[in-house]
Length: 125
Ligand SMILES: [Zn+2]
Image (cartoon, rainbow, N blue to C red; front, side):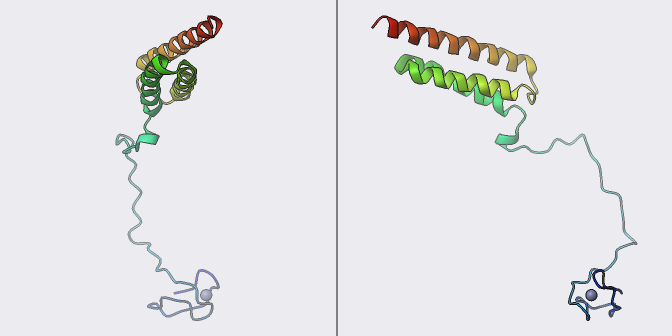
């Protein structure tokens, strides 16, 4: 067989080129089957790669915002903003658009409500 790097002729059983030391790979022409294309099988997604990751993230942040609203409204606004951002980022990827839109609206309304509550509490001081 011939070296793919330098073209030198080598013994058919050699693993390395006699001339340049390049690793020799046996040409496999007999069993050149086409790669199987299977679009039906969904790849197993990790959490961060799931198309609904941002939907869950946004929902979790909404819950966090509700919790923080009672304790620290200032942090609740930030958490609310993150939930809106997460919902906006996930809009392209989500597999359940109606649920996602609902979460986005809840995130927006909640963040606005927390913000108004925070402003009112500062004004009343
Ligand atoms: Zn070679």
